[in-house]
Length: 326
Image (tube, rainbow, N blue to C red; front, top):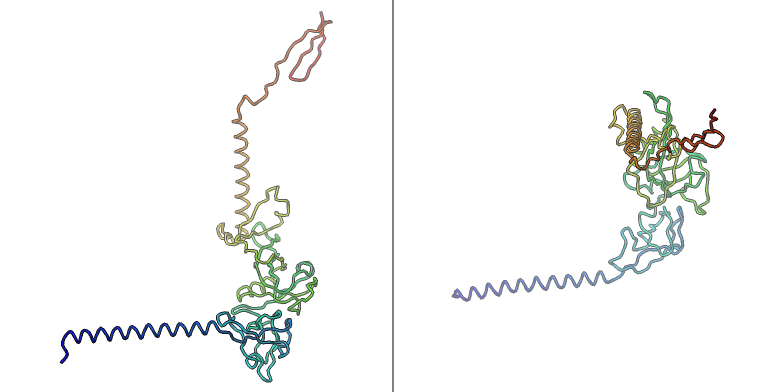
C-alpha cells in the first residue's frame, strides 16, 4: 500500500508530465505553422497587359511563386480554378503585367463584361443626361470623381420663380460615359449621358432631380475631402464676393429659420442686413470717439490791411480781398 508521500510524488510527476506534453505540442505546432508560412504557392498573374473586356486565356496567364504569408485574397492557385473548361472569363478592369489576377477584377465563369459586376455591394448605377457644358466639355472620364449640381426654380413666398443652384451629391464615381466604360487614350469626348455609382437613396435623388431641374457635373481632384458645409447660390450671388452679398445657409441649417428653403433664404438675408447695419453703427461710433487732437482745426480768419486801403481776409486756405473806402 502506497504511503501518503508516494501519492504526492505520483501526483506531482503526473502534473509535470502533462505540462511537458503541452509545451512540446505548442512548440511543434509553431514550427509547423512557421514552415507553412515560409513556403511558397503558385499564384496566377497576367503575362500581358489586360484591358477592360479582354478575354482571360491560358497564353495571357502565368503562375509565379508567392510567399504563403503574402497571397492576396481572391488569388487563383491553379489553371482549372481560373479558367474552367468550356467557360470564359473576361477582365473587368485593367490588369498590369505580373499583377495578380484576383476574383474581383475578372468576371464570373462563363460571364461577359458587365457594368453590374463592377459595382460594390449595396451600390447602384444611375445614368444622368449631360451635354458639352454640363459634362465639363468632355473632360469627365470613366473612374473620375465628380460633384453633381442641380439648378432649379424655387416656388412660394417672396422668392417665387427665383433660380437657385444646390450641391446635390459630392464625390461620386463615374462608371461610364455614354456606353463606354473605358477610354484608352484619355482624350476628351462630348457625351450625352454619364453613368454614376451611387447608393439607392442617391439614385432616387438623381431621378427626381432630372425632372425638377438641370444637372451639371463638376470635376474634382482625386482624394479631395467632401465639403461639410455647402451653400445655395441664387441670382443675388452673381457678383464678386468683395461686395459682400448675402450668403445662404447649408441644407442642414435650412430648418433653423422655418419655412423651408424660402425661410432660410429670407432669414439669412435679414441676418446679413442686420450685421451690415451693426457694422455701420460701430464704424460711426469709432469715428465719433476719435481723439480731438487728431482733428485739424481751421485757421482763424486774419485781417491784413494792405497798402491802398485794401483788406484781405483769410478763411482757412481761402483769401478774399475787399476795398475799404476812406
